[in-house]
Image 1: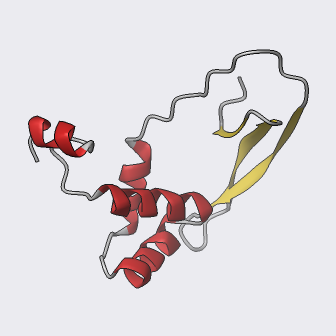
Image 2 (image 1 turned 60 degrees about the vertical axis):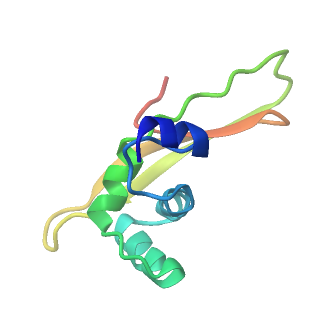
Length: 115
């Protein structure tokens, strides 16, 4: 799809993905592993999107932080560790994540980005 066509249809240029399929892939990938997301997308849409393609799709996204106007009156911050899959027989790897809820404004999560 050319840039002109993409502007008219309000989608990304030079992509073979439909905006709906891309949204489905991102949503399912956010809720579970890439491998499980690939299986779910195949069941839900009938389209096979491999786990490695799911991962590449997520990593090429740029998620802009929301801009806030006014004073934040209430906030919750939580964090924890998530276990990454490793080949069988190798020790597990754990990574940190943070979740922030600016009540009545926005919610965000960060992976290995404490600042």
